Image (tube, rainbow, N blue to C red; front, side, top):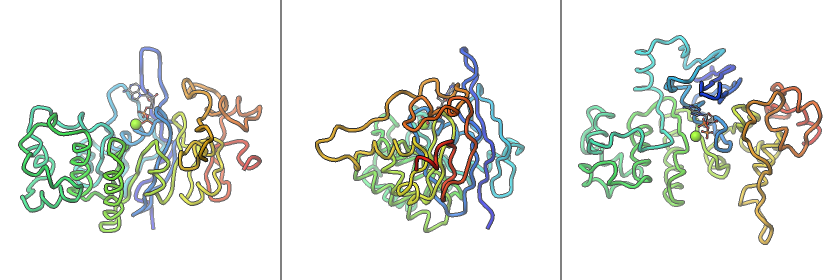
Amino acid sequence: MSALLSVRDLGVAFRTREGDVPAVREVSFDLARGEILGLVGESGSGKSTLLTALTRMLPPNARLDAGRLAFDGADLVKLREDGMRKLRGDRIGLIPQRPMTSLSPVTPVGRQLRWHLDGLDDGRLKELLAGVGLGAVLDRLDGYPHEFSGGQLQRLLIAVAAIGKRPDLLLADEPTTTLDATVQAQVLRLLLDLRDEIGCSMIFVSHDLGVISQVSDRIGVMYAGRLVELAPAAELFATPRHPYTRALLDAMPSRHRRGEPLRTIPGTVTGANRLAGCPFAPRCASVAERCHEENPEVRTVGESLVRCHVAEESA
Ligand SMILES: Nc1ncnc2c1ncn2[C@@H]1O[C@H](COP(=O)(O)OP(=O)(O)O)[C@@H](O)[C@H]1O
Ligand SMILES: [Mg+2]
């Protein structure tokens, strides 16, 4: 079956006073129908920019540069804005990273929910809120966003984007980061059930591999705007190929032995997207000379697609 979403050589650069900042570079992947792709990478690696580019809602100082961006046969690079708006309304749902910025502060929350979900009756609204553990706020919907906690607003947006609109593609940007552990587990369960029920595809972004591992069929690892590894979830955990993926796994608290200091990845990502060679080279434990000179092309190693010169030797 053909992919629902097909992305080839996607790039996004932001124009700033200090010059162009390449935030996403040469990203390619396909997403199958019903598939959940997890995207992981530290803050600033381009995850939110990538999702925003897929909905074509980039800010005015961004430049999109895509070899191909196809959604169910439609060319998203060429699609006119009214067509794109229709797709965003009906078929592509986005759960944004910061819930406050996508709600109006001066309108009661209940009225905003009804804007987003035309013809929503009270029974359905009740069901929607119960689905994200918000049954208790049902009689507070005439309140304004600032009267709700960040976690409650996040869950309201999840209810709208995921359950209310039943999209074919759901883009979820750190949807559970602001939630406490029990609510987080509840929301992850809900997203998985939704996929099983309506067969939607999902791109689930998080900086937390532990969360990503609970929902993903495949996992993509981003570093300095590049997709450096893409592999089936089990494969990524069993045989991580990219040194950055290995470092991320080593830094997971669940893999940490008691009494040992928590491991972190030495160095910083700052400036990495301006390097000529591999962006991870300055921090890499397996670095070779050519890593500083040439950026590696995508290669297949085992079941992984990986951008690394030394992946085989060091696996
Ligand atoms: N509106 C913007 N203008 C300029 N630079 C931006 C803008 N938005 C994001 N960036 C830069 O793009 C890079 C990727 O950011 P982002 O996509 O938010 O990463 P992530 O979601 O992985 O934390 C960062 O270097 C960030 O500073
Ligand atoms: Mg982000």
